[in-house]
Amino acid sequence: MTQQGLLAGKSAFVTGASSGIGAAAARVFCREGAAVMLVSRREDRLACLAAELRGRGHDVDYVTADVARSGEVAAAVERTLSRFGGLDVAFNNAGVGATRTPLHVMPDELYDTIMDTNVRGVWNCMRHQIRVMLAHGGAIVNTSSTAGLVATPVAAPYVASKHAVLGLTKAAAVEYAAQGIRINAIAPGSTHSEMIDTWLQEEPGARELLLNAAPLPHIADPEEVAEAAAWLCSDRASFVVGATMPVDGGWTVR
View (spheres, one colour):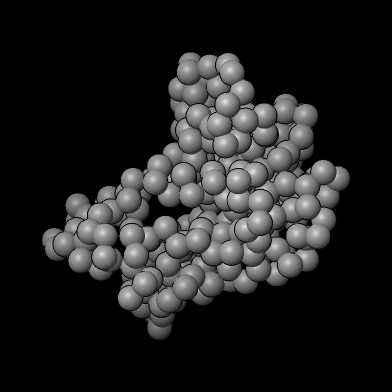
């Protein structure tokens, strides 16, 4: 294929790639010229997505990993290096979706799952990616949420975890910018996903609630969010460091 697009010639690492924003990012990153390593816990979905993208002529591989486990992330990064010869950009998107469980009845296990995946997962990904990027620079984008900017009506640990992602992003951005590694975050609003689509089906009035919550009355397609991540990973965002980009239809403007 001809080397064209925002990410032409770059090797990319995308977590949470089995569905939603992660799968959309895999498609967008490939379309923009990157070779992409797909990372998730669900091998069957990764295999199907990899086959789809290879069928379109893209350079893709996949590896199963739980981002909450440092050793599995390290192995996935090593797989990327051996397969593509380097790591240029990373989109750390894996996360556990929000619940509406009240704080006072939430079991410890649910709290731990949310924090381990959403916070420790980003921590694990960044530290292994940065070790590789120190030699030549790179770009990292972490997925937070509008819940990382304001308190939304979801479980408290989810809100706390997405605030923590922004803290990790800013701290790492300051620490490594001078070494050629740009680190930023996106804060998606209402986006079609397994969690959101199930909620829309089960709760009457949910769609109207989401549509009325932002100036742009629209629930995002995952690709719309992935486009923002691709731009932040690209050289066109060369002077953007430590930023949080809302991709929320204007929800946080209010």
